[in-house]
Image (cartoon, protein in one colour):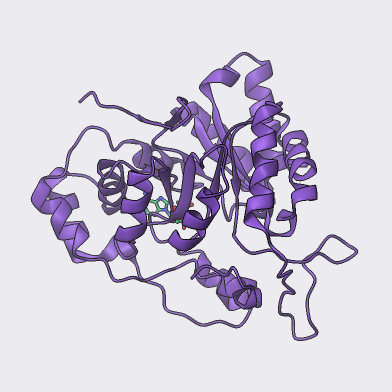
Length: 323
Ligand code: A2P
């Protein structure tokens, strides 16, 4: 079945619909996994400094590029301005650090990772109160940060720019101050968190959407536990409607969850470090859900957010905390 596998961005560039997510993978794991992802044919790689794996990813990319196994122009690499970098004077130097770690001259997409800003201590770690909660910097100015993001495009350091974890009001406000409109919004998106108003707004505004945690990011449970938060997370792979549709098409539950997102015209970045599952997640272009099946899954929306930043205890106090 032949179909469009790219999203066309509002600046005329294109982004592969299916990407490879790298959150919650150690440097050792990601070195093996990114090699495997490239072998399998993933060309859209999503990372961020807060994932602590840009250097490892950079080494793999460099090996592939210098061996001529892949052309830079056929890769789509996204990274993000981390929460401590949310200050106009830090934008360019923060991207330059990512570029050095990734061993690239430019990224295809640079996103403001979160609308809130946190402080760093003298060791470069998140600054914390005695009880361990993170100190926020409330002086965040999205319009001023965005102006610097636009400067990165002018300098050729980022081909496209966008935002992540912003809510509708924050995007609306930011757009009034843009010379370059955001190309992409990256948000948590899956059957239990569909955010129809936000999606409609972005579609009407020609902002492409990337869905993170499409399979429900079960690893968040462990992160939450580390800060003493016990929260039952939904298991999207066990939802009866999903399993039933999967059975009909001889596909896995994960493939149905990903296919449903792609059919909505969103880009999606599942993470796996398991070779079999990485192949499975890429193999979603040979079947199609019926309108009834799409509707059946649409009805499962429950406004359940997995990545609520509980593991970044303290950030909810920031005036721009979005949720
Ligand atoms: P693993 O890396 O061991 O495959 P998300 O993309 O929503 O963040 O979800 C990632 C989680 O889902 C990881 O725990 C990953 O584990 C698991 N996962 C990824 N792909 C699949 C799949 N096809 N089937 C089952 N679990 C998957």
